[in-house]
Each structure stands twice: as structure tokens, then as C-alpha cells.
Length: 277
Image 1: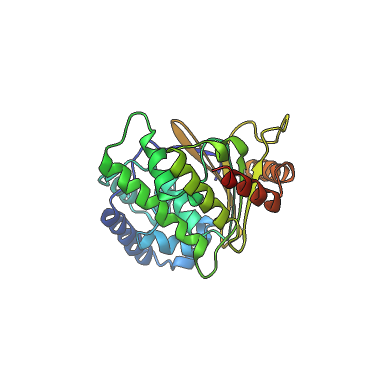
Image 2 (image 1 turned 90 degrees about the vertical axis):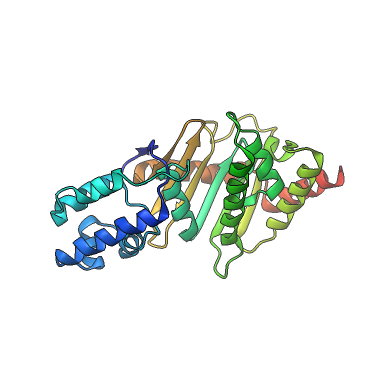
């Protein structure tokens, strides 16, 4: 799969996704395929086919078209996917990213605008969503904050992924939400920096150049050791699986880690900022 631009669809109804998954299972069995043989035909994991059939992972339009061809379903899967009801505003590729994030064995990111969602406090996340233009209503903000905090459970699971966060210093110093929210967020960052397998590094403001002036990104490694990248801008997102493109961002990440403060020096910086409160 090459670089894929953001789909303009919204996230689909979960029950309808299960219906599409059940259709896929029915057509697969009728064609004499197992989940394993179907996965091998498309060079994807057996778990990915199982997740789609169970409605846990959305079926993408390009894969639906290929499945229709292979299973001779006369376009049924593509038609079903095209008419799923919309329930919220999460883009399909963002939803795919969240699915992959939940199962990732390694996560690395660079942020230069706001703190990574996996490290945000509830109050900080609320302040971020309240800053959106056009504005969200209170119900939508509450839903988004809950979803963001729920994502963070992966950091405290029995087998958490190896995580590396590089954050530009102005992001750490910016009092998003006000002084009290900021102080609480700094304390939370300090606590997160002690989690097993988590490395937090601040990229100093005084650097005269660094490896990612092009902007933020996230790198994931799946249990099958596939490497993916995800990037967002103000009006869209990209999920990238092309090995050459992911390799470039992996090189950027390695360079950024060498240019940033060590995890120990980062903790010292957080301690100094907290001491100034």
C-alpha cells in the first residue's frame, strides 16, 4: 500500500461495520477460503481479516473492491461499504491509525504544536479541543476527551508498547488551558517519564536546526513487524505504509532523538519548570 490521502468519509456505525464483516465472512466461506488463505491472497495478516469480519476494524474501499473481484460478489461489499451510516467525524484513515495504535508493539512520535494525545491530561485535552475553530459543542468535546483518555490505557497495560516521544520545548512551556492546567500537565509528564518502556525527550528551543522542520509525525510497528507512519495537518491526514517513505521518517526520528535532550535531562527540565510554579 502506498501513501494514502485522507478519505472524506466519516467513521461508520459500529453495528453496520459488523454487518459488513459478517457479509465478508459469508462470502469468504462460500468461496472456500479460510481467513488464513484469504489473508495470504492479499498479503495481509490473518488477524486483520478476522478483525474486519468481527467489525473491529473498518473495511477500506480499495480492499473491498479487490475482495469483490476475488470472491465474485458482484460489487456487494463495495456497495455495502458505500452506504454505511455516518455516526461521527473521525476520518477512516484516522480510525485505521487508532486501530493500529492499540495493537502496536512500538510507537514513536515527534510533536511541535501540542503534546502527544497519549500524554495529555483530561484538562489539557479539553483545552485543546476547546481551541478548535470552528468550535465543538460541549457534548462533542466530552466525547473526544473521553476517547483520548481511553487511548492512554495502552501505556499502562500488562505488555505496553515501547514508546518514544520527542516534543519541541515551546510545546512543553506553552500554558495551554491556563497556569493550573499547565502545572498539572507538567506533573503528569514527569510521572509518565518514569513509566517502563517510555522515553520522553524535549527538543531544545536553542537548537539552530533539527531533522523535522517539516512537522510532526507518528511511527508505529505492528505485531507482524510492519512499519507504518501517520501524519496530520489542519485539513487532513495520511496513513503511510510505503517502506521507502516510512524509512525516511524513521531516519528523521533517529536524528531527532540524537538532537533532543536525554530522558534524564528532560526530567531535570520538567523539575525546573515545576519548581518555578
